[in-house]
Image (cartoon, rainbow, N blue to C red):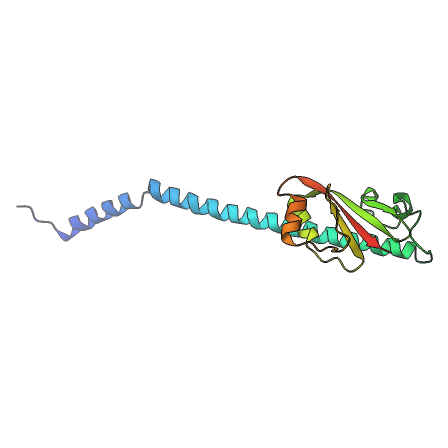
Length: 174
């Protein structure tokens, strides 16, 4: 019979502990990678939503700026007849594309945004832009004259679609 001394037991315990601490098993490594992928996907989704919300807020601000600048330019006039992109381009901030503004009539004017992504279109169509906005045309759809925007979420999704880009044209009363 062989007897085990206290010293030889400690040596064997250390050798076993070294083997256990060598690294992660394949299952542990796969679990860590899976969790890491979930964290990265979540971060990307949050960034995308924040980016879209920022663009929607900027677009709403631009629409308000255009309305304000056109109204102040035509404050002494009876209407908006003769309103052209070139007329209002000088009053807009430099970062705005004057090609996005529309024309005018005696009773109002229109503002068109082109290349609006579907998700942003849906958010803009459901926003309340104020009483001055009397109509909204999305792409080839027609705005109702009796029910001005904001659209219901279902109507906004119908008009904007779920992918691609579209044109949004707001009609602003004079």
